[in-house]
Image (tube, rainbow, N blue to C red; front, side, top):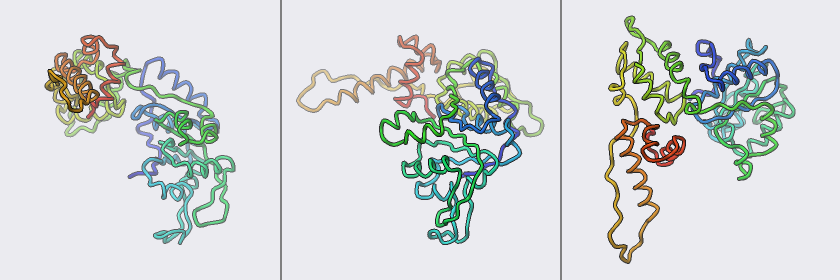
Length: 332
């Protein structure tokens, strides 16, 4: 589990995409990169929020200093305070020696707090205090340590809804949400798919001079019709899988069935009983089974093309994608 990472300049030449929404995001990054304002990056999982954070650092006057990332969801709640603020020797069982936290490690640079919406409320209060004072105290210590960091936070959680549920502090949100950048899903920038594929294929490691894979126009049309529920991360993994299966090849539409992880095999359609009888009838389960079966069968009939499936079922494409997500259809 990697909790700290340095800036990977090889992956940060630019934020890939030619759509208007991506051009606007790049423009916003250039405008705000050299400020000290906290930035909240929102968007679905796999949409590239970490790339935005790294670009903000790379374009700032802090670029020569550390870029430190901490995934708040990847650390046990009882260890997060130590990871973030550090600890002194003997502060708890196993603390053999003093250790600086992420704030100290990022001094002069940028601290990226990923999945900040998953942080426990008790920890939120401690983070808020540090953001207000710019001073940390290690666990088990009493010496205040001044820190100079630029905060970038990211979340795939609706923080306003989390506030309504009482699991996120509104005062912390307003500290983090000085500037907001919203990353779109891949479905909302689907015209960027060909250039993203080109970007990923050009960076795939190749053995013995094998050329990068290419996709025919027919294959690209099928790929652009997929839901990509895992967003850009899923597409990147797909390209890696394609390179492994077809190294150096030109991939056509017929090759995609081996690569696309979609559930297109038809399932038997559940039929309601002729008579209800006296027993309990789980109508919700029966309707769910029927909906799942019809969507799956329609996907099979269209070769997994979401747009064509939506038309066949009389649904909007976005409505079908949401149903597929809810019913776990098409998720690897």
